[in-house]
Length: 146
Image (cartoon, rainbow, N blue to C red):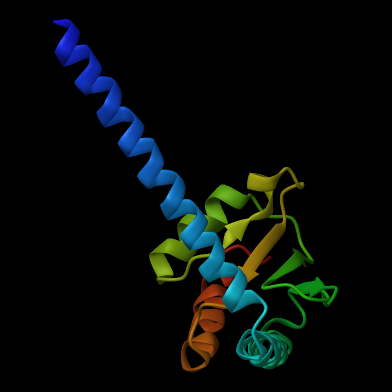
């Protein structure tokens, strides 16, 4: 590489770094404006209320269909609900049965808990699909109940 091309490459790198730094400052400014605005606080309040409503609805469905099969402690400020099954079951087999029934959940053993724990996420599932999902989970679970 010649001295001129080395100098040009160095200048291009400096321009690239300079643009990246300005972009970062600009994005930080936008984030600060949004996070300190009254609209953000209103958005946050609506989000908290919506998640609370979803949790309440989801718990009512669990109590309706799976009261005898699992138990849980209602979390504060979560988007997931951890449940413990009331009878022993192999997580992998339950997960496979759930997939066959068209429902997904997270076996607790993925996160290091003993087998027999499941994590449901209620934040992303539309409310009109929650009941069907729990019914499908119950069908998968019924394959292993003694």
